[in-house]
Image (cartoon, rainbow, N blue to C red):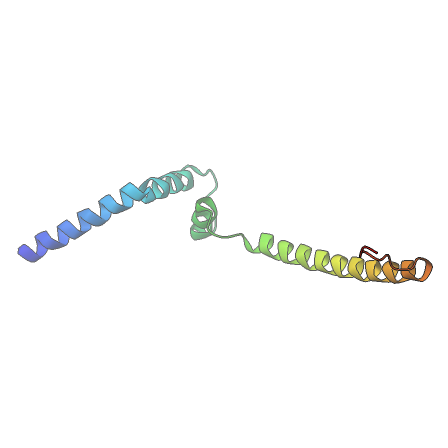
Length: 101
């Protein structure tokens, strides 16, 4: 009987911890939103993850990777163009001395 009471005490402490941290409220809100959905999603876990904001979705992550790759290529091209233009400019203008005479 003492083991049962100790176990209940730990459960109650854990429940209070989750309640204090807002976990119970967040889970309740998500489950209510799922319950109130007119058309239930095929994957309830994905629905819960999405509503809890757990990581970007696969499509979003892939599109962000593609955008990052495109921007990196454009950056590399612009840096190369900048380098070429600086070299061409040096052909027409001698470098300026920054030191005082």
